[in-house]
Length: 311
Ligand code: APR
Image (cartoon, rainbow, N blue to C red; front, side, top):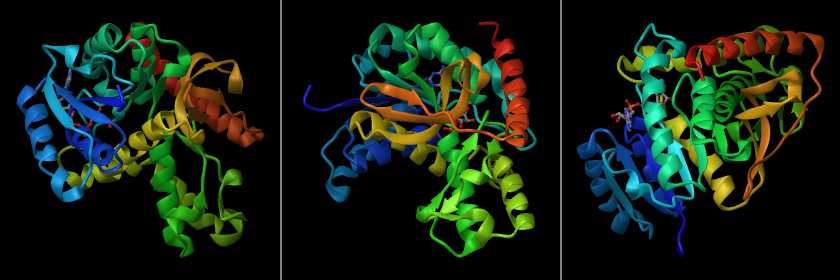
């Protein structure tokens, strides 16, 4: 096909926003899939009707999960199928119900899009991406989880706000699981090369780290229903774009580790390069003892969550 094909499985808040972003960036023809067939079809139709105004060429169509053949030969599948958090819930509280959704979606992808690059967004992220990897049996470079890009983007915004800088100029790194013990690595953060620690006082930075860790929960509490979607959608689409356009951008993502960072057989948030081969490599940063200890704690949480999937 002359155009790439992007399957968005889950046509909720994140799925719908991603469809708009993929359209505006002309990334490829979009297929929205949801157990609520009408929602997928309705959003797709609404989005098709933006094409003359926003001026993009790709098409956006939709359908239900009774027929996964509509994702046939997709180049990229981005999965948000499942339920979001309600106020007071942790991401882990979603495990059982979302594992059920991921299992069905993984089977559909395996059957109809066996060569796709799969980006999982559904929470609890690190165990859902693990489940996707196990059930599809895809190679490790073709299954990845979106978390670090979002956590980093939150951190970048808070830092920029505190430093009176542009979020675009803030370089940041967040490691570990997508949970409340994620590890923002301050030593690797700067504003256009100026170390953060020089620009923002320590107590303020500590508060920013804490706010980043709870960044998702802050939005869940404000919205009252559902969780964040604009920044999560933007993050996943940036990863898809790097793959489709072979940009080789580096992002912190949940990737399958085989010894890096002392972790084997687990998905964990680490910096990776995404290009035409998918996750082309994992970047290993040197960590100090304190950072290693924080990462160790995060690894334990991810292990516990993965064990619950029984996969
Ligand atoms: N197959 C396809 N779609 C499904 C399935 C399934 N088995 N189960 C649920 N869905 C659909 C729902 O019908 C809904 O439209 O997934 C969609 C999820 O959309 P929202 O409820 O709006 O949630 P969203 O904010 O998009 O978040 C989705 O991403 O960040 C995570 O924690 C978040 O797990 C949640 C997911």
